[in-house]
Every structure is written in structure tokens, then in C-alpha cells.
Image (cartoon, rainbow, N blue to C red; front, top):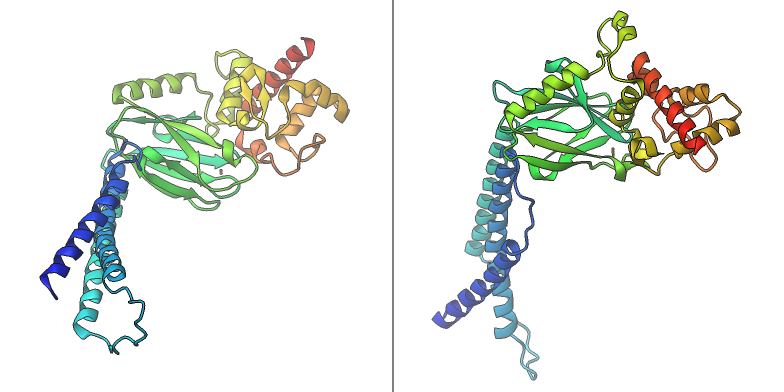
Length: 356
Ligand code: CUA
């Protein structure tokens, strides 16, 4: 091979590599990391990208060089020389990809195992997914529940995720951790937040009509702020469903409509329904500001109508809507006091909007 060709090939490789590097580096492809895991995933990503750019530069240089240098002349009708393989070349182009692919596998295996490794003081958060909402509960803090994933900065957190109906998936781009939530299984996801802030938490599995609305947030707080939030929630929360039923009648000091509103919000009703009393604007299910008219149409007393529509959503379907969209699980997942609270809240706000 002549020295001139080597210089030309190298020049082409540098140009191709430079263009590819600019495409990789100039746009912001990844969100800013907010967890230790995201940092490791980003490392794996850039490791693979660097290998890709290296290979791309070689292939592009050889291709462009061949097109320019070995272009057929206008009066050239000869066949090319017969070549039957080149053992040295074949060994080289087998060994190099083997080394690269193996190194990607090793780096990925190390990153995945370290990303799933819990620390000693790991915080447990139970995640319940259902069409079309997430509920987060903190079993170590007396089953405090929240519609938003609250996390302390710098602490290892393990999510234990269950689905009440179909397959969902939990994803926070800034954490670079994602896992499906599958009915009948408890799947796990490990996160160590490193940055304060509020990040989108989305369902990334097509799970039904309201899939695009199945969104929540992950809020990372200072550990002290997180602890005091947890304590405050523990005091105001309704008694957890697992405790004895004798406490349910004495419930909490909050007003019935506030209790009903918090049940409404915690169970994601607002993802699907419009209700001005809750500032909800969902469009998947019927508009709850019109409950008085719906009950009339269904020929039922308002309160019984609201109660039955929550416990057995398919019993009466408002014209224009479909069966089996609203989960039929609220009869089991809500305690009696939660159900009563949300029913009376809905009846109250329906009557108010009916009087307007
Ligand atoms: Cu749940 Cu998409």
C-alpha cells in the first residue's frame, strides 16, 4: 500500500469521525442525570457511542476512498481480478468486533449489577399501578400513601411495584431506570437520587384509553425535609386498610369533603374525569360536574348512583362512553371510610355545581 493512500484514508477517517462526534456531542441527547444509576447508564451509553464512532470512521473512510480511487474508467470493460478471500483480513475483522462486543457486555453487566445493588438503609416504597394512575406508599412509615413519588436525596430507594389490572411501566428519564409493572408479579426498581427537583414519572406501556394521561411526578427532597413530610403525612393520613376495622369509624379530624378530595386525588380519578371541585380536567370518563343529570338519566338516587358507579362501573354506562375502561377494583382497594368520603364529596360537589 502506498504512503499516499494511507494518508488519504486517515484523512477521510478523521473527517468522518469528526462529523459523527459532533452529531453525538452537540445536541443534548440525554436529560441531565438525577441519580447515581443514570450516571452509570450514561457512561455505558458514551462507551458504546465511542466504539460506534471509531468503527463508523473506518468504514466511511474505506468506502469513500474506494468510490473515489477505484471508480471505473469510461472505456474499461474488463472484469476485476478474481480474489478468493484473505485469511489475515478475515481474522482481523473477526477479532476486533469480538473484543469490542465482549467489552460492551462486560461494562453493561457491571453497570446493571451495581445499579440494582441496594444499600444497607434502603428505603422501601410500594408502587401500585392501575388504569390510569400510580399510588406510592411507604410501608416503613405506617403506610403513608401519596399520588407523587417523594424521595430523599442521596438515599438508596427500592420500588416494589404491583399492578391491579394490566401491564404498566414506570420510567423517570432523569433517573435512567425503567421497569414494567406486571399483574401477578412484584417487580423491583432501584434508584439513588442525587439531585433535588421535580421530575416527570410516566407510564411507558400502552395500557388503555388513558395511557397518555398516566403520569405522575418524582420529587427529590433534602433528607430532613423528606422525614418531616413523612411524619406530617403519617399524622393526617386515614388509618391504613390493614389495621383493625374498629378504628375506621373514628377516622380523622379533617372535614369530610377534604377527606373525599384526598381520596379522589390519591386514586388518580382526575386522570380520567373532569371535576371543578378538584380542579380535574380529565376527558377519558364522564364529566363529574354533570352527576346530577347522569343520575336522573339512570333513574337512580344521586348517592346510590355515585356509590354503585365507583364499586361496579359497568352497571351503568353513560351514553358515549365504553364499558371496562374504568377499573372495577375500587370496591376492594378503597376502605369503607375512604369510599364513603369520596361518595359524599362527589355528591356534595355535584349538588353545588347543579345549583349554579
Ligand atoms: Cu399505564 Cu400506560
